[in-house]
Image (cartoon, rainbow, N blue to C red; front, side, top):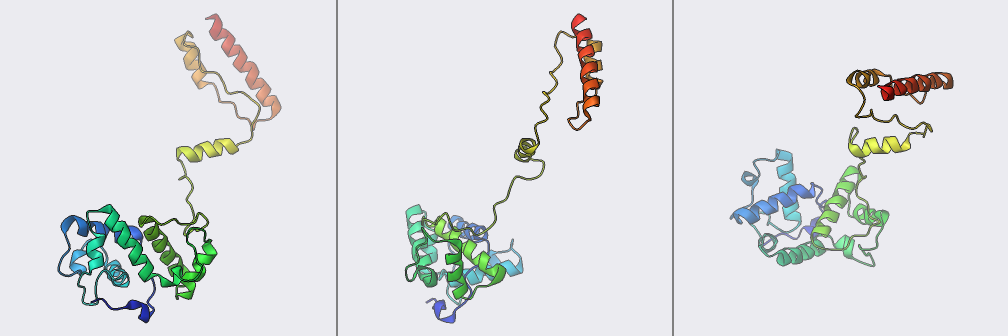
Length: 227
């Protein structure tokens, strides 16, 4: 029988939810063993193995002697409905400090949820990780999580990506100078080669330099057209 960990006031789970879910999915694929121990977690570091076992105990998925509980069996069920139902039960039992009183996850703010976890003893970066695990688990269970709850900063596009380049271009001041037209397909080969070597217009050049560039470019285009 699993120990009632709520009386011990342990810190809520703070491992990455993906690590937890991958392990659960692995058990669903291979079947529940007679004991859940570190030998099933060979690909994980020792620290992560310890945190995962602590998480499983906190959620009442294994007992103190590492024996699987009925909840673990249901969480690895082939039925998606069954998995989501037991996930709701696990959350309700493991996070009484969240669901008590008038707290509503569907309309809560980040501060409101933060206060719930802070009152449970979570602090610093662990608090953020605890919240992130909880929110991910709640979403997995099909619960509605408030759009006002943020558990991590959103990442922008990576430098050099198409989105980043598009944003950079959009933010660049308009010089008012139209881009040079592509070379005409009817131009002679020598003229096309010469045009390719022609310096690209720099909007930051002084006005007199840009004027000379336009004059030279116009002459070059006229010669190409007459060829």
